[in-house]
Amino acid sequence: MSVEWSDDAIMLGARAYGETQALAEVFSRDHGRAAAIVHGGASRRMKPVLQAGNLVRVTWKARTAEQLGFFAPLELIEPHAARVLDDPAALAGLSSAVALIRAGAVERQPYGGIYDALQVLIEAFAEPELWPAIYTRFELGLLADLGYGLDLKECALTGVNDDLAFVSPKSGRAASRSAGEEYADKLLRLPPFLVDPHAPLAPGDVADAFALAGWFLERRVFDRRGEGMPEARRRLIEALGHRGRL
Figure 1 (tube, rainbow, N blue to C red):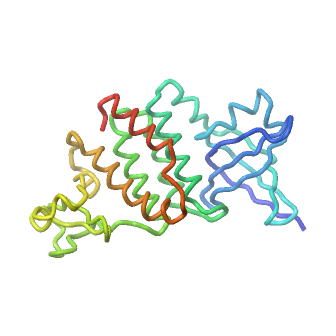
Figure 2: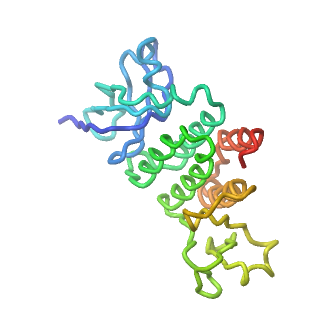
Figure 3: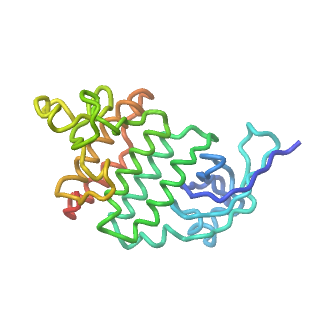
């Protein structure tokens, strides 16, 4: 008995597999991260299709669910990758998001929230001044869907939800400015835009959001797996810093 499913998916990447084939990895809403062989994937026609970030329609087939299957067909829906090729920062953002999913998401487990957030992020790359903040929201959403979400609804010390300004590096819970000011040097800064979607972005807010998400990604996800943070994320922060967009 064979196993087969079809879904829209975002390309995570591909590499050569033999002389004419490619081993491609995709991320779909209902089937999560999945890899399979693409016959003819090494051809000139298919290489642009297999670029990370593209939205594709795939049918995964194998004799058993445990086997390495093959994608037949794998068809391009939206060429998102081509749209960021001329923007090094956006390309770095896409590469970082893909690297985090490849490293953090368990294979063949659905993560609907991460998939939807990645779709939003990819569409946001058309807005250079907006997407860095959206990217940091993507990272916090990734943490939540992996089971390590932060509690930013109210102050852990007072129970109020006004003027939240800090996050405990131990508990991941928020603290108000008045309650946390005394311990500010031991807490992580919480940029207002992460708790209030209408809050304006101030200089340094995106950098603080990267620091916040990075602290918990590193300790709650990658350190526990004995892995380091994907290098693509460091390159993204560097690219944004050079352009004054942190």
